[in-house]
Amino acid sequence: MRKNEADHNEYVDPFSIQAKELALSFDEATDENDLDRLEAILDKAQKLVLSENEPSQAYLFYSMGTVYNDFSKLKGLSFHESVKKRLYLFRKSIGIIEKEEYMDKLYEPYMLGFKEVLYTNYANALDDCGRKIAAIDYLKKVLAINDSFGMALGNLGRAYQHYASLEYDETHRDIFHHYAYKCFVDALKSNDPNTHQEAKKLFQSRIDCYDSEYVDKVLKPKWNFSQFSYDDPDEYVYRKWCLNHGLFLNTLNDLLVAESCFMADVIQLPDMITDINSKPVFHGMFSQLKQEYIYARYLYYKSMGVFAEPLYADKETYILSYTDYAQYSIRLEQLKTSFKTLYSIFDKISYFINCYFDLGIKEHDITFRSIWFEEGGHGKNKYQYKNTLDPNSNFALATLYWINKDFYDSFEDSPNPELKRIKEIRNALEHKYVKIYASFADPVLNDISDGLALYISEEELAEVTMQLLKILREAIISLSLSVNIAEKPKREETKDNLIVPMSLMEYEDDWKI
Image (tube, rainbow, N blue to C red; front, side, top):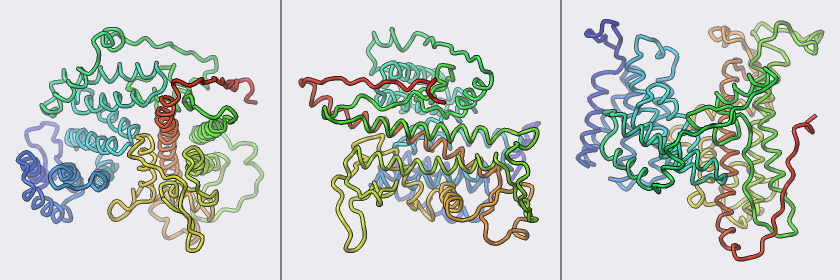
C-alpha cells in the first residue's frame, strides 16, 4: 500500500499498480472485442491474485467478474454460467472490501470509488438472474455513497421500470414508473464520466418509451404521499426501524424515498381465476406466510433491545455457567426463534408453489430445493413430477430459483459462503446444540469451547438473521408477483367468459388479540 503524496490528508491507496494495470488491460481488450487477449489477461489475473494484498485481490476479483459478462457475448458462454461466475467473483471482492479494517478513513476515497463500480456491477448481475429486490438494495448503497453516480441511477431506473411491469396494483405501478423516469433523467443530467455513451442512449430510449401524456400527468409532477401518524411512540419507532431497514412486505419499501405511508405490510396475492367451487386456499396460505414473517421480524426487533434488568421470567432459573462466555436469556431465545421461524418459511413457500403450480410432488418430498427438480423419490420409489417449473417463463419464479441456487449450488468452490453458514447455523439450532457468546471471547474461543456446541457470537447471529429477513422478504414478494404473472394468461383466456367476483373480508386489526 502506498501513500498519495499529492494529497495533504495522506490517504493510502490500497490497490496495487499491477491490479489497476490489469483492469485497464481488460477494458482495452473488451473495447477491441479481442477474445484471445481477454483470456490471456484473465489467466494472468488468476495467477497474480494469489500473491496480492487483500484489497488488490478484491480489485482483481471485480475485474475478472466483469470479463465474464463479455464472455457471454464474445465466447458464447451460457447466460447461466456467466451469471454464476459474475456473482461468485463479485462476492469474493465484496467479502474482502467490507472487512472492518478497510473501513478506515485512511483508505476512504479509494474504497468508496471502488465500491461504486463494484456494487453497481454486482447489482446488474443480480438483476440479470431475477434478484431484482437484492439488486435495488445494492444500487441504493451506491447512491448513499454518491447520489449522482450515473450508472447506478440509470440501472435503478431500469429496475424500477421492470418492477412496475410486474406490479398488479395500479397506483404502485404508477409510482414505480414515476421514480424510474426520475432516475433516468437524473442519470442523464449527472455528467458522471463513468456513464458511457451506450448507457446514456439506453437510458434515453427508456424515457422515450413513455407516452407524452403519461409523462406530463404521472411522471413529471411531484408525487404527494399521504402522511401517517401514530399515537403510540413505540409503534412509530418500530415501524420506522422496519422502513429504514427495508423490511416491510410492501414493494414501495424498495423505492429511494421512505414515506410514512409505506410503513405497512400490504402485499397480497393478486386477483385469481378459479373454479366456482374452489375455496380461497392460496390466500389463506399466503396470509399465514405473511404473519409468520411479521412475527419473526418483531422478535428480531425485540431481541435488539437492551433491558435495564433481566426479565422476571429469566430470574430464579438456576442455569449453570461454564467458562466459555456463553450467554443465556429470553432476549437471545427471541433472536434464535426469529432465525428458525424465518428459515422454516422456505419450505412453506415450497408447499405453496407445489400446490399452486400443481407440481405433483409428494408431501414428504417438498423442499425449497426439490421444487426445481423434474422427479422425486429414490430407487424403486422414484417418480416423475406432474408439472415442472420454468424460471425462464416467469421472472418472479427466477428470483426464487436463484435464491435456491445460493443455498445449494456450488458457484465455484462453494455456494455463497454467507448462506452456507446460515444453513450450518440452522441445522445446529434445530437438531444439535448452540451456544451464543460475547464477541470479546473470539480470541480465546478455541481454547475454551466444549467441543460439541456450535459457537456463534450474538453479533453474527443478529447479522445472519437480518440477512434472512431480507431474503425472505424478497421471496415472499416474489411469490406474490409470480402468481400475478401466472394469472395473466388465465385472465386473457377467460376475458369473454362470465366471471363471478368473490370478495374476501379483511382481517381487522382489532381481532388480533
